[in-house]
Image (cartoon, rainbow, N blue to C red; front, side, top):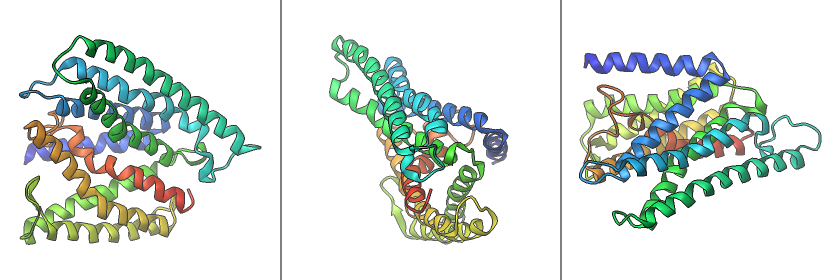
Length: 293
């Protein structure tokens, strides 16, 4: 318990410092987080008797982190023109053109990475090409895409807004903490015993209610979103954070491991800490866009 508390303290300090120091520290922090999560993810999906192949992990990491480095870092300057951000003259044409150019560069790099992978797989008999490439693209969309969307959420109109990031994380943490506390105290009905024996319906519902209450509170304390946006984010977190955690638990069960990694003593790996967050991010991004950016 003491080890968990110490790890949680330093984890929170690093997260808050990285998010609030400046835009570049935020980008660096979440690029590193994305890289570590990808490494842990490919360790899970390519595990064979507990020993994942190093080459598969390296290739997967390169494939997943490329769009984060290229497209994610460019979100600051190009934004997404359809979000209604402050744009220069003739915004749709200029920004759409930029987006197409950067997206083209990303897919070019992905192609340059995939071709050598296919050549190497030609001489391997361990995994089928379809399964390997499927795993690579699973990691790309499971981890890489959500982090890119996080950069977009955090930088409306190329102006960095750390409260948007921290507020969303705070909703996730609220859901996790209260689901655990309420489930430990009152939980009797198993939610998904095959995947996660300790999760209960009582804890899940209690955590969701507390998350909605926190979203309502944030709408009064942080004005980076309006009340409708905060409540929409609260509903999304309440409904999807637990399924995100269950999906990662399913991957760990398939690999026969307890944790995705050992980077955080007492807590497991970074994928264990951010599984709900990355699952929620695409839906959060969509809600923010539809409700006014």
